[in-house]
Length: 95
Image 1: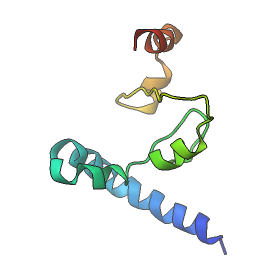
Image 2: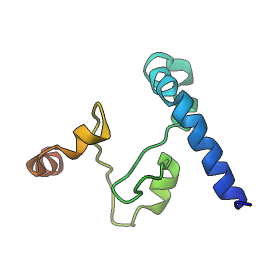
Image 3: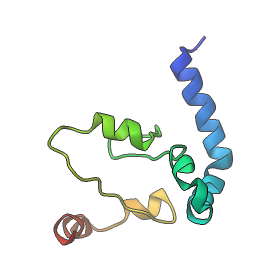
Image 4: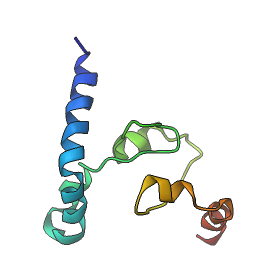
């Protein structure tokens, strides 16, 4: 039997796969509930592999020296991985 944390993660991952797009749409359209919906968002990170993480958990794991979070948004994970490396430099120097 999986540990309670793994069980909960698996359940939420299933929930996210079914309702993630609706939650993202709600973030854009449901202004009064935006902060509540934001707590439900999950992301893949450069170090999480296939696992999803929430913003609060990501911030908790940030090193002390890290003061900013940069992200790329795109149509698909495949599209994002094809972004040329020079864009990363621009993101860091243009912001």
